[in-house]
Image 1 (spheres, rainbow over the protein chains, first blue to last red):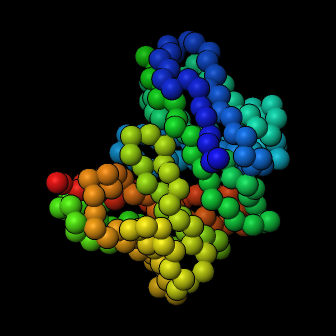
Image 2: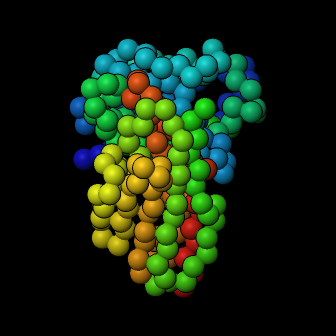
Length: 116
Length: 112
């Protein structure tokens, strides 16, 4: 089973709202990722968690706040977003990352976010 | 700065044709090259290549990496309309081993 699940599938929020995106995997993967994908563009890495610790933050604005409550779950908390933050937010996981080896990343179906 | 360049950016072929998609890269501390297929939603994993000259094959799809010339190709034989998608090439590089640098993708349309 190579399934990564994400909820919700679609989200519309105002610029003053607070919302959260959720991601879950039960493959025993120890690395989890958030990507942002704008229309007709490739995914851009936002955050990486390895063994439940934040290891990479690609200079993402603080209105995006990741959280990894346990090895199977990854959240992305959203607050005071801008309309230009509207995009497809993809979660991915891999067996592990870092210098220990190289493993393929499996992607979830994404959350289509619209900020009004 | 790491670069991943895919060509062509778009392609229209007839069912039954064979297509070759290209991916060239310039990165620091190459670790692996991955191919993904993206239809409406999430990219789905196709291949990961780490060694030069070894072909990976899955059904009508195959891919090979040339680490000397810094490129990879993805071949699709006997194309079907279900192969219509964006094909993304991504390179994992750097000492951290985490970052996937994606190319812009090749948009493939297979017509009946």
